[in-house]
Image (cartoon, rainbow, N blue to C red; front, top):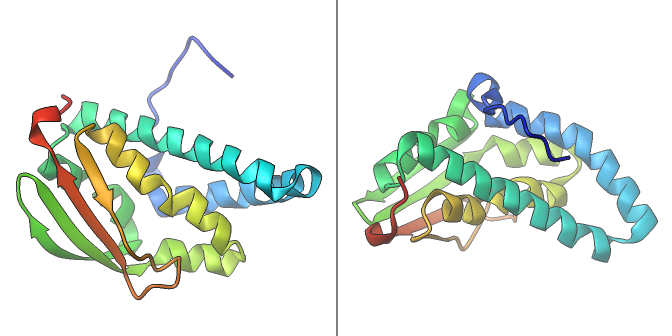
Amino acid sequence: MDSDIKLKDELTQKIGVLTRRETEARIIAPFVDALIKTFGKEKITPILEKTVMELARNQGSSLAKEYGSDVSAFLETLKFWTQGGALEIDLLEKSETKLDFNVTRCRYAEMYKALGIQDLGAVLSCNRDAAMIEGFNEGARLDRETTIMGGGECCTFRYTFDNTNEQG
């Protein structure tokens, strides 16, 4: 579905990421389930993962164009993911090249679990994070050992930024 008309996506700013993800999940979950029943999980899951990661990279790139691509700009964009208490974050370290925090409460994980689609939630939300930072700043990287969605007590976000590769 390519279109010559590209409208700026302002939905997230209006409704917040949590509401957006719930709406998307309620639409996509039955569709993905039907595709898996028809074609098999081993064929559908990689396609879904690739598509979601590409969307996340593009979103990161769009955010960088609007906010800049350094640590402070990225930290500012987290307001969309934390809106309405969707995430509770414990900031551990912030410098020009590093941003470390733990998510101590994740209402995204709670929502996916309540919908009975926790595995799909990891694909639709958690798997976005590394791809999004790649789009936001080509020199940035996310290392994460645990997620609440995966059964951890917290989500460990450890970002490193190579300032020589900033986008603008």
